[in-house]
Image (cartoon, rainbow, N blue to C red; front, side, top):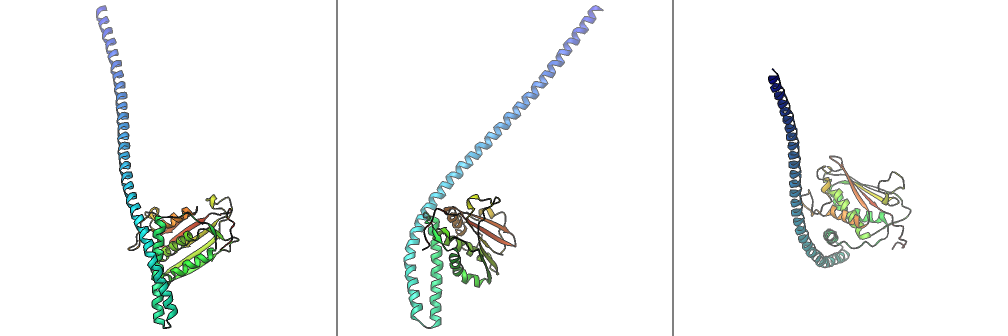
Length: 303
């Protein structure tokens, strides 16, 4: 009996050790599985990172090629714009002389059409030159009301053609705006024409100018004490999916045009140290808000 009991005890002990070993093996197997899964996950992450790095490198290479081509096109465009401006100046001069030298209304009307066409071409060339070569801003005191009126008169034929109402609200400013007139002129022209073109079936175009109040709720601290210009239309609005792209060069949803207008606005506003934001609602219209910072360091008189 003693021998049988001894054998049974040995068997129980062996079975217990076998169970412990099995449990240890199972535990190590699970640990090994976890380590393999972790290594696999890390390897997949590294592969994804490598693929993304390769995509980024390819995108950078393509972007560099595009930039090189754009630089070449920009240089050629700038030269062409300068060459075209000389004959345009002559055409405008002869058109002015024609208007002064004839009394017949029909002939004077032809001269007006020529002047309008020259103005449109000069606007397009100015946009092209500004996009290819933005000069350093030359800040001076500027009559903002006068510049808005100039932009309105330039867009007036299209405003009338589209049957658009012009609503203006210009706050009396204690000091003139200190700005680069050429850059501000292109900004206003592009924003106003963009608003007009957004309402081919008519609507209302609102232009408002106000002093950026000094308060704690102002999000743009650099603009406190500056001037805020808003230009609103009642057009179809801008779809949310394309809103982030509207300031990209050559981006346009229109059947005609260069796609440079809003890109130039952003380009010029940045050069002036200001900011431009847009809010849009489908079927309700869009509002562009231009903020120009104060320039207290400038004290030269208005010219």
